[in-house]
Length: 78
Image (tube, rainbow, N blue to C red; front, side, top):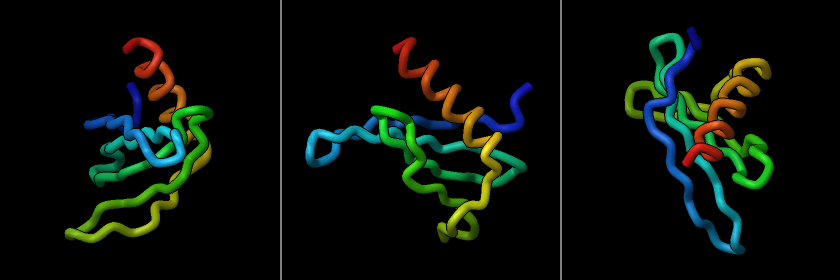
């Protein structure tokens, strides 16, 4: 079983013809929002959502790689 759950995923069309994927996840009972470039799934930013605020998240590279793979599968299957 995965240690996180993707609760929402949005693919945004941005300016300059770049698309980004924003994934909202739950991990260790906290909410996180991660934004990746759609073309190569490079992590653009990661935030932990606490008490109505967003703070920079400190997630392990292994966890980010797992989330990236999960997002890639979801994009390919849609």
